Length: 229
Image (cartoon, rainbow, N blue to C red):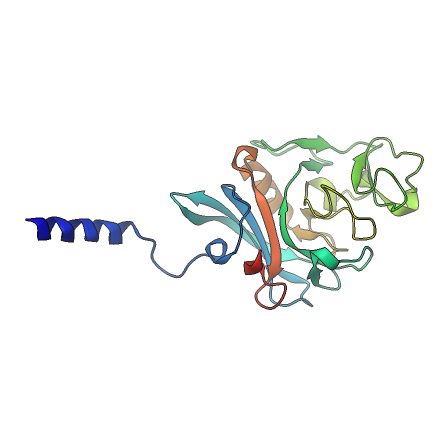
């Protein structure tokens, strides 16, 4: 009877175990500790396109919630800790997602903080400004317009956007500002990650701030491999 019970218990555990190879998040060194994760993966550091996937943590395992084709910087990707502003590269690493914003109204179901873009909304990228790498309304006197993004001017890209926490908590001047996940433009980005407008709507409706979502950006292999993060 004891052997039969042990065999039954073993069979039950096998039935509960996930089948197939580990998912991408399960191969990563760190996923941020939350219950939601977005991965943006490119084949190589010189790639300008790849795949964005969003995942839910369920019963101790990561389950794919959706995916979409993604675009990266016009000059590919680079390690976030050594990135230079103006390099047109997308920073690799693991980041939090401070808030979302958009020219259009938030999609139904959006729970993450969402700021509506107005005429006076700017993102300061001026290294000499106290507002470096920050949303400002209006643009402060020490933040030059030539060194900033007037958000409402990007009607297509910023219809919906999500702030990626690269260089955001304690900004290092010269490393880069205004890295977002946003709607596709005409081609590769200046360093952001972009996807279709439909994908952005789905992501914003899916995100749950209570689950502490993060975003990981990286390549398939090498020193910028997404599994390092």
